[in-house]
Length: 379
Length: 140
Image 1 (cartoon, each protein chain N blue to C red):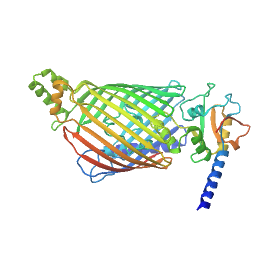
Image 2 (cartoon, each protein chain N blue to C red; image 1 turned 90 degrees about the horizontal axis):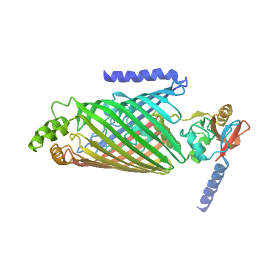
Image 3 (cartoon, chains in turn yellow, brown; image 1 turned 30 degrees about the vertical axis):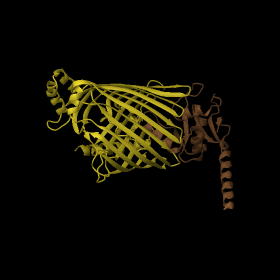
Image 4 (cartoon, each protein chain N blue to C red; image 1 turned 135 degrees about the horizontal axis):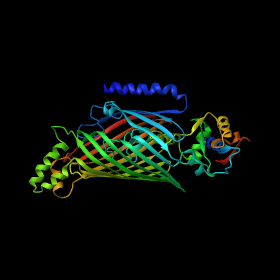
């Protein structure tokens, strides 16, 4: 039923849009990525792939309709259907923009959280060289909130940039260590600042939200069990107050990000560092970063990327308890890829990624190689 | 072998001279009060980073269709970006509702007509196509 409604939504959007497209005030854009990937063996988890090969995980279709209502107000809606989510369709964006002046935009509705460098165009594979963003770093399992944001552009001499502040709420699924929880993240708020000067760019973001996880799986592993058993363990450690630190409602999580970019037209580099700090001890704090470099040679762009993520234990009794749950990970990937620009709106991509799980689920992991190919286009 | 090399060099040189002679003129309406502009100022307008002329009046960029020689020359010499880099740049803005690329016109004549008709517009054409209906604010 969900699929039918998603499909009919798209059909309605397309058929409603088609005659109006000629009217000139309605813009229709879209993006499509079709990918295939295969792992050499099933000893580690990356990009949802397995050793039987698959065409689904990297396949994404997005359709955007926007309309300029008047000089200062526009409406934008974007439906995204992801193979990794069994092609269920969701509104990634749906907002109204009010431009107070040429430099200040106020938006309200369903918005992307601007946590990462690639956040805004995360699913538009055409806009970057790799087939998908580095999974170790791009690890927030939801991307949109319902709320408001304010974007102020600035330009001074050779420097131009944007300051964006946002506030909203996320209600929906939240996946952690293979278990899906019903989540309600309240007071999700943050700021991002990006600036460009010549070939250099930089970006900083701070984001925080109040974590509320409900309906944990009645059986099975994961946070719910961790939370339950933390109570007993805290008692064993002779520190019953520590149990409170394992609550999964009302605790604040924060996320910071810093990125540096360089692009001279031939060589480009992106370095991005991120860190999670959770008030609750059920979720492990971590740090993750990546560095990628690419060289454009006409239509060909070979690129290389290193990405890594490492969980960190809390100090004291909480940390000792965390160690018992076997949730921590320490992983990294090296990715070699080639992008070929077939024409000015179509790119073909090939990638080999070695993913090494030094520690996964608190135990020694394995290393696997992922082969992927994809076609990305925008229209 | 040597002959082939000489021929190749000759072809390269003549190709270069053709490229060099095909100058791109950045134009505004004849009645537009702005003087000449540098490539940084023009780039900002064409990349949607600036929405006004140096004199403060509103600026609307007018583009040429994909694949036009004038567009390729302009992208290369003024914006310093390839076609796919530009597409990528605009895609990042389009799919976040943060901007729309300049409207495209079929050829030099269409751009010239559009620019001549509206003092808020700025476009570019092959320098050979310039006439009195428009004013050149930069040659690249």
